[in-house]
Length: 325
Image (tube, rainbow, N blue to C red; front, side):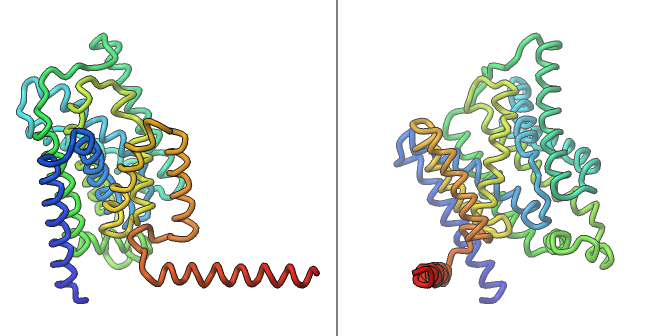
């Protein structure tokens, strides 16, 4: 399939997904709409995370920091600013923080980068908590200005569609090729003239902008927020899990996994939280061992390959048993 045909196919699939999600509130129950909102939130977060981290192989654990920054910005700004302006401000502040953070830690790789991004996330969370207690005299904020359900849903839907659309465009651009080059061999990319430091900071900031915007939009869903809620590390960890299990390098993997995880979350987390966490761990283990490309890499020959491998393993096991006998 030619590149132009693939582009048309991806755009049509995105249009179909957007149309289905747009029609959902008109025939779905409140429970279904709530589940869809969570799904769209993780589509935006994991798609933007995968665009940078999947391409460059940098494991960032800072998603919850940018999400929380956007949420707090929205909570403060909504009393004086319009809805879209507060979301743009949340995305902007998250981007500025990401540029500063990226300039400080993006020269590291692997475990060091992951640990430092997580540490900076915790630092931001405790700094906000200290500010709330010592300056404002409270540990949380009540949102008195809250848009209606449809406005929140349409905003998060727009952010999810925009995240996938940006992924489609960036993956076909020189910027996207530079990100892929960094992931393949960063030193070689530098010798070919790629300003790897600038590219990495720009990509990191792009993921932060989406996380900040989504946090700003989702903050009003709780009506009351505190640092523990919006800077929750689980948001960042689940974003990483969704991207990895779906296929961080792929375009549609994070979207597919976000739908699967949203269904699991709403059906299992409240009734059987232990089973939900076990399911996440099991999916991650199976993906790492048998499906390194994620759910998006599933093909017909994948199942046939598994079948051949399992038959070969059983034959080897039976031969060992016969030799023992």
